[in-house]
Length: 151
Image (tube, rainbow, N blue to C red; front, side, top):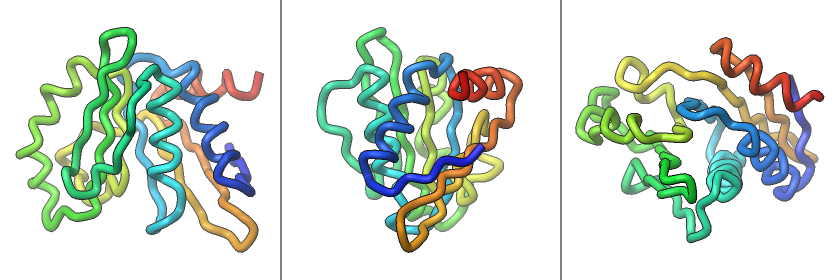
């Protein structure tokens, strides 16, 4: 499934649409180069899940967790700065997973083998006139979730 986003607001609207029907415990991989819109997507997604404060980029902290209205958490990771995949182990991710409504991971390829498998992978492809977002559902639950976008 592909979506073209000519403006930042298009990316935010797509993120909000996905978040609106997000099942609990979904793992979302966000692939793409620097400045491709991954953090913009994550912020809009987390706000739509029910977090009302500031959503900061986890570029330096690697992981930020946000308490949602329903008592669960949205977890946002940015693994860009990892030198080795096993550095993820120091983040105690398994503790966050227990209470996660969604786990959004930027640069997941840097943590392979130490992060949970994706339910969906979103590839952000920068183009001259905007961004192309390719969404690939991986799990059965994600297939159902994503197919709801087309209805």
